[in-house]
Length: 102
Image 1 (spheres, one colour):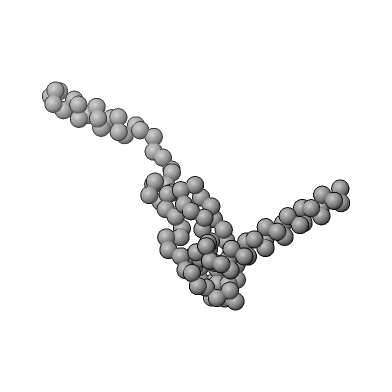
Image 2: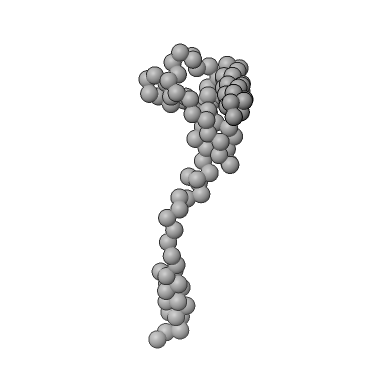
């Protein structure tokens, strides 16, 4: 056997026995869903809000519109900030009521 062919055969044997991974490529895992956001979305057109917080991305708000289109909303929008404050206060009040009943 030719000595020049031996390293090539060894490299080929090693690479074929390396276990394959089912994980997604890093570029897909680290990609944020909202790459751009809208500042103005009429509230009456929103059917549903989703809040995403992932380790490598900032806080993301996705609105599903009545037309079934999904858009990303800027989390700093004033009406959205007020909506979040109201939701947090509502949760706090319900927790206080539940604690008082016990």
